[in-house]
Structure formats: structure tokens, C-alpha cells
Length: 535
Image 1: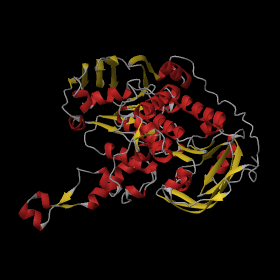
Image 2: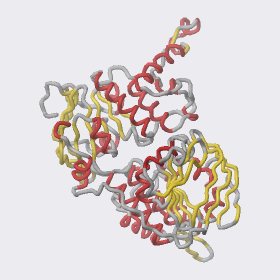
Image 3: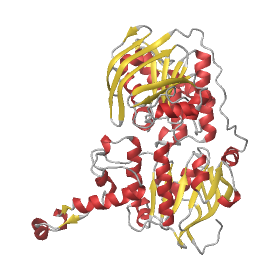
Image 4: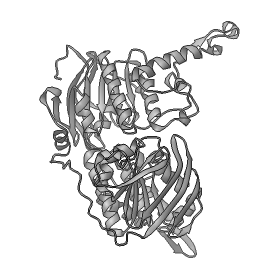
């Protein structure tokens, strides 16, 4: 990929951006050809999101003085007034965070505001606004794009009933279904998908490219970048540090080194923690069932050892995400759970918190964050509510100690390397990876005895991912806190956990030490016994 404009669909020329004197993007120039897939990689805060906001003329770009340089679509200089101008020009984007209507079907979400209608007697007399929906034609249109993606998804299924992977495919189908789409941007589209679903999606992207659609593929899964992209842009600290083509035979290690400016260790570090008392059980789960959309938790029984770092893995929808949500009272649950030898009531979030259990949800925007509040509020608010921290008595009144709250937040900003302007910055303004670090900080501040962490590195770049995992391990080892981590990435679990429980068909298929061969884990995920298969 070069700056030759003959075949380019999209072209950036010397694009830059500053926010209140802070330069976040500097002199970005590249071109994207028709039918090509361009990878865009960089650590959180490198400038990827700012580039996309500029392309779509988002409010925070326009309201802060616009941008430097120029952008061209089909050699025509762009001057969008709002995101709808970009969409109408044929530029679409699949965002990392879903923007679907839960009570609508897949078809209704895919064709939202572009519905097919048919005349009726009433509409003939009183006008088009009283036309009825042509649901047959709408379903045919939705089926066509779903088949193009190659996913097994029912058009009439409600979004609220879908597992998270299917929701992502609905988001993608909606953008692909638009007329005259010229450029499609995918922001971490595989972050919520299983390996098999991700493979389906990557094949679909190649089909779209073969049809002439130009694609920008943003991902922290660097092996996917290497596998599918025709060329890659690497951003670091707002600058374009590499622009390489597939013919240059770059590797995952090359991309990681260019992203962070240093060599990144790719091997999993061995887990050497030795538990003081292997028979000291901090939590006993028996016959747990959980009613959670898209998750099957039918009959889970599991013993968790005090002080261990336990992993929970398995394929999407098999039940792994439902376990902590059920125990912490965020989804209806039944069965028996004992903590320190005493059974406690399920379906009671406050009870779980009072017992010094904490949870970092996989849904950081839905359950994890106060998006329009400052960082220091997000870090300390739960501890204030549950433990009465940060409250001082003045003449019989309890008043919050904002100074101590800000000091605590700054401590976590430093230790977790949260990229922000200050502890007073609104969380909504942070990148996804830094928002996830805020969720960890808030959980740490609760001083839990058992900490459940669900998909802690989803949407986090390779440098920050290592930092988050190290922070969890350090918290486990230095404080003796029992950590139960749910993750879709098996190698991530193997790099940090003592043991890993694999969930299949709503039950514990088996528990293995993290050092066991990956083939054994694969058999358990498939619902097979490693011993029976001779693994």
C-alpha cells in the first residue's frame, strides 16, 4: 500500500489532532485501496480511536477545533458535518460496544431505519407513513447478509436472547447490509467471539474484500492481523511508526515490538505459586444453576482453594460467564454456595459484597462503570458504599473525604499505568483498556477475600494485557486474595492460573493444572474426557 491515488478509496494526508494543547495524533498519511484489508494496531491511547473519530466527524473532534490535514474518499476531499454524512457516503463502522435494540429481532436491528414497506388501503389514502412493514422482504434481506457472513443465526431471534457472539454478528450484518458501502471499519470485532466464531468472521471479511469493499481492521489479536490483512499501520504515541505490506513477512512479535517500542515476551511465564494448605477450601459451589441470557449454567459443582488463582474457561455460551454473575447476584441463581464454611444467600448482591466478595464484570459499561463520573469516583465509590471508606464525621454528619478519594485513585493510576489527564477526568473519555483498569482498581479497593474477574483483558492491547495480568497475579500473591478468573483465551489462563476448570454444557467438564498439555483442555472443551481419549 502506498500513496498512489489511482486505486485508492480512502486517503489520509498529514492528518493531526490536538486536544487542549495535548497532541494525540501527528502527521498521519496513508491510502487504502479497493478490496484491501488494512490492519490498524497500537496500544490503547496510541491514536486509533482519534483517527476514526476524525473520519466520522464526531462531536468531540468538531467541538475542539477540527483537525489538521485532509481526508479523501475516491479522490474527493471530505468535509463531513456529522457521522451520518460519513454513513451516507458509504463509510460504515462496527463498534466494540454494542448499539443494538434488545427487544428487536436480528432482522429489525439489521434493517433499522431502512425497513421495507408495502402499501395498504390506509397508506394509499393517508400517505406513506402509514405503510406496513414488508416482513417477508426484510427477512430475505437479513438472511442474505447473514449467509454472506457464514454464521448460524436466526433472523427472527430477539437480540436480548442472543449470546454475545451473535450480537456481534448482528452489528456486522447491519453495516454490511447498507447500500453502496465503500469502506468498513471493524473495531475489535473478534474480542467477544470464540475461536470458531472468529474464524467465520475473518473468512467473511475476505469475502467482503473480494467484492471490492475496503476494510480497516482494528484488533489487539495480532495473529489475526498477520493472517488476514494485506497491509498494517502501526501507531505509537500518536505517530505512524510502521506501514508494512504482507509481502514483507512481518510476524506477531514484530508488530508487538513496533507497537510498544520494545521486545515483548511472547512465552507464558510459568506459575510457581505453592499453596500453604491444599485442603483449605474457601468456597464450595454445589449444583449451581444460573438463569442468564446466552449462558448455560445447569449443574456446576466446584471447590475453590484459599489463596489460589483459579481459571474458568470454555467455549462461548457453555456457562463460564454465568458462574460469577450467579454467585454475585447479578443473575438469578440456585443451588448451594458456602463461603468460609457457611452457606450464604444467592440473588443478593449486597450480601456477597458484605462477605468481602468482589466482581469485575465482563460488561464494563453495563455493570462496571459510572461513565459520566470522574476516575476517582469510579475507583472509590463501591468501597464508600460497602465499607464506609472515605467518610469522615463532622459534627455528627458523615461527609466524604474527596482528598483521600483522589489520592487513592492516583495510587491506582500509577500502579496500573492508567492513561489519563488526571484523576478528575471522566471515565467515558478513556479508552476501553483504561476503563477496564478502572474496574480492577475499584475491585482492589474493596479489599476482597475472593475476587471474581471476568474477561479482564478483553479489548486491551498487548502491552496493557501483560500489565493487567501481572497486577492480578501480584494482588493474589502479595495479599493472599483468592482470584477466580474467567477468560475465553486458554493460553492467557495457562500463563497465570494454578488450576483451570473447563465448563461445557453447563457443567464442569474437568479441572486441570495449568501445566497440562493444551490437547487435554481442547478435549474437555469439546465435552470429551481427556483420560478416555488417551490424552
